[in-house]
Length: 538
Image (cartoon, rainbow, N blue to C red; front, side):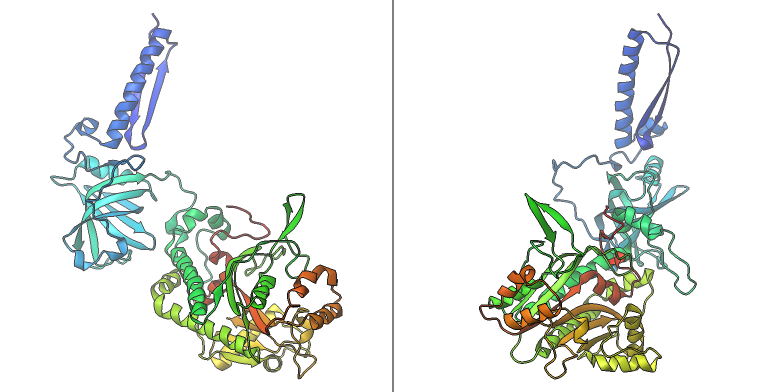
């Protein structure tokens, strides 16, 4: 019978079992070896779940108070456990026993103690385990070996601290750990650390965050866990909610428009073509036609929130190929300023409610990205295009009365307006007719001007709008003037042949509004999973 030498090494912290075999084993020996290995593996698993005195050769007084919970498959329902959110841990809970579910942000073992930081979304609290008559050395070792970002359940006594814990959001209390279980373990090697991704930018010195943007976006699930990102996307949700709430209060109706359409929304070539059964279709660049059709259907005031697609090869800080559009359209009685003022007042109300109700989230973003608070006037500042030309001329930029503003012109104008009027938000009215689309209503008092407007935040456009031509014959005339094939826009023109109220509206990019309100430098920071010409994943 061949001799077989087996050396076993069990590493309980990572649930590995290593077997080293010397010599060539017989079949009988292999069978015996397999049984021994299975037995040892089961033993290692039991010890990793609930380490005992056998693991360390000393009595483990903490048996049952720590370990790996295993996969939760809804077999138990612990109604008796009182879970408390980290953000609600305060002095009022002193000496109370609570359960917390969060992520292990950091851990540090020191002698017979182990300090941990438990993170739950944007909030953190310090936890402490110390060897005593109920906490064993084995339990301390187990806690110190839990990998960062693992989800854990902790039962703890809330205690006040003599000095504030500046590294956590909950500065006045800490958690004395009684029990701790790993609910879902994270890999030992993380592609990025949330701690690094959440470091503050030092704009003044020009230094950058440790984790660059591409690596963040490649590992977005981890990147989104930073306090700043948690706050950014809660603010973004708030902007959408406030847009809906404010317009609903003003009598608007939310509608839902198609994203798969038969022709380009705005007549341009920058559209995504998709296969549609035996033919082709396009992804909508705008819901404009459908908003206008809703007004023509007597809904009068409508808005929609949904995806917008632009096949533009624009690799800039403010362009995406897919973004969330906040669009609205409104019938008016006599003058398109009825609509312009409604939109302007909607924005000031939105800014006010963000400032008053989301101060904590804004402060959290500012801890990582230092920006100036957003300023606005109520009612909003309204300028006409010739006034903008005059301001730019005073700054040395000469434009013709029929020229459009370039991006550098807009940014400079934003700085000039801020310096003169102390506002980051303003409306620019009466754009030259030559630079606006064919469906824009010309100004009746000036053939070179149109009833159109843009609105700006921190010197960047966030909405472009206008009074639409609602008369089919006049619309046809303007389309021919622009050299547009009438057959290609027949369905658009026909929408107005059964009588339509005068109306105006505009489209807003959600991600751009949030970026500019917070003063961030790139729209990819406000798109949860951004799409641009170079990025299609994750």
